[in-house]
Length: 230
Image (cartoon, rainbow, N blue to C red; front, side, top):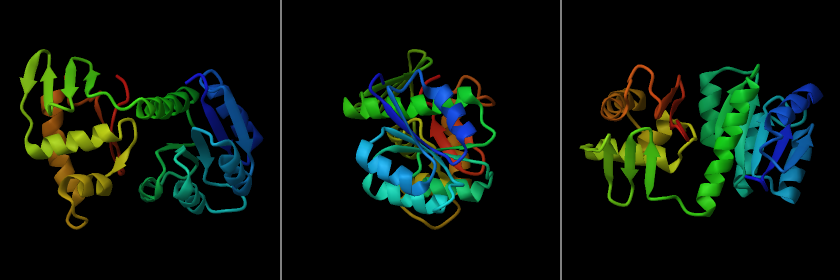
């Protein structure tokens, strides 16, 4: 992460300053933009690894900016917004945003979210390891096996497909619709109902405490993500 570049796109100087202060230990280059057009130009020219994108930029709607960036850039997009609508969060994630944080935000949480995206890029660049460890859970993607505390855990085919989809996007929130399409390969029906049942079953098999899960995290009203680290 020493060579990481992060772009902060926000029209409020004090917010840009707060974001810069939160992430300055994790990025070798920090770029700033006060408008959407300036942000897009900087992304094209400087190729940052992560974009912290405010939805309230003065010149272009946030959803439009997100869609345009994702059309030609693979930079991770973390949306930063004062809007709290679950519907909007889902829309932006489905347009290609990687994460969503609402204002006012915790600097520690923002830093953690940025670090997650930087680690994802590092892991992608060196290929995703076949074996993933979380607490006492060992997941071998190549062998399609899960061990917990040294004991093999039996997963149903749907539970494995659900786990694999979450791991493929580890650290990123996947919406209910995205997971439903990935696991059941269909866009109709009630994704929240299907997922609620199978996520609960998966947590019973993997988590030490299903009330306070550390691996499979719920993003209320939006979807689920597999923790980047616990």
